[in-house]
Structure formats: C-alpha cells, structure tokens
Image (cartoon, rainbow, N blue to C red):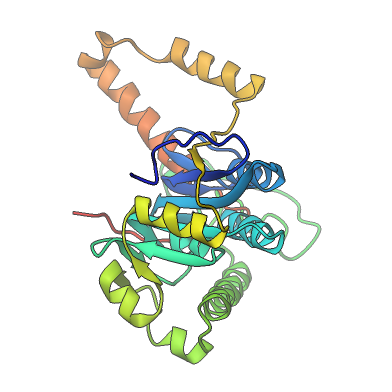
Length: 298
C-alpha cells in the first residue's frame, strides 16, 4: 500500500508540507513560498502532538537568503524537539531550495532533480538612468555617509557597493558552513562542489549532497520509519489565509481585467505590467541577498 494512502490512525500522522515556487520574505503569495508563512506552518506541525514526523516537499529554485534561513531554522528546531524531518526534492530544489533542505535529517531526490547551486548574489533595483532620461532628478540632505545610499532613484554609491559585496561574501561563507554542518563535510569539500554549480539528483547523491534517491512516497516512508511508526495517516497542512490576505485577493480579482479585455492592446499591456510587478515583488530580501538558481527543469 502507498505511504501516501491515509491510514485509520487519529493519533499518528506524518505531515507533508509543500514549498513550491520562489522563496520570498514575509507571507506566501501566489506561486511563491513565504518564509514567515512556511515557518509558521512548520511550527504548527511541531507543536501538534498528533504529528510525529514532517516531510518537506521542495519544488523551488530558491530566492531570499533571509527567508531561506528562517525556514531552515524552523526545521532544525523541529528536529531538536524530537520530530524527524525529511526533505523530498521535486523537479528543482536548488540554491535557497537546497538551503532549506539542509534543515532535514535526510534529503531525498529523484535522479533528474536539479539541486545544488550553492551560491549567493545581491540584487538592488536602480531607476536612476530611466529617471534621468525623463528629466527627473533627486536631491536631499543626508545625516550620515550612507544615508540614502540604497535609494533606487540614485546611482549606487561606491561605498555602499563595497558594503553590499561584504554582505555577499559573508552570506556565501554562511551557506558553505550550513551545508558543511548538515552534510558532515568540511568547508573545503563543500567549496569544491559549490560556486553556484547545478547538479542532478543522481550526481548530488554521489557528491554527498543527497542521502537517497526516490520519490515522495519513499520520503514519507523514511520519515515514518524514523518516527517509529508502523501505521499512520499522511496529512497535508496548508497555511491559513488571514482576513487581510483575503481582502487583498478580493481587491485584486475585482481590479483585474476580465478575459474579454485581455485580448485588447490595453488589456495585454495591463496583464504584462501586472506580471512584471508580481515578479519584482518576489525579490524582497531585506538585505538584498539571494540564493536563487536561475535554472529550470526541462
């Protein structure tokens, strides 16, 4: 019988939590993983006495480094509380997707999963040039050398760029240390397979980044075995949508153009602007540091 088939046991459950999409800071949005909302979901599973083990199903190219660490830490706390955690990779679990996987006791992947991509970069929006073309300039009075240095309306200050580079180097070192501690490897060993290189699940298994090859079914059974369960029910908890989020979704649905207007030039323009705006909102790390694999599964 499949491990995903519900079993009649109200007291013993394995929770499967899904992390699908880019990882963003804050609460989840459409097709994205919110660091705070997923962390809360993990916390709820940890505090639920009926849930004996957690499986995190990852299908993510990564995103915010800050949010990735928030999620990983909650998984670590769950393990420390005595509940086994198993990470199960779908088609992509790279960069931030791999970062959060390191919080698990075991990492499972399919042979064709894309993973690894241990690296970090900074992304800072800058609109100085387009504003200059429009004849718009910005002025002001600063109270400190770096006050307003990251204002997107101004060119990036040289000293601010140096500070950003230091953040990148620190973040990369932190990523290497996180992987080394999780995989029982030295930092030097991790470095040889890091620097943003992407591996298939099969290759990652040989390199020590993945424990076992197999699908979600096998990962659920592994989590149940770690928890000492012979009969259990598999549950799929989902984050609750608060009143504020419900209102926002309602406003978006009302304001969005209907299917008929989308065919018009104006409708297509509005759709394009909305898609671009949604994409920009995903890059919201508070420190502008990202562990994001710019790769897609074929």
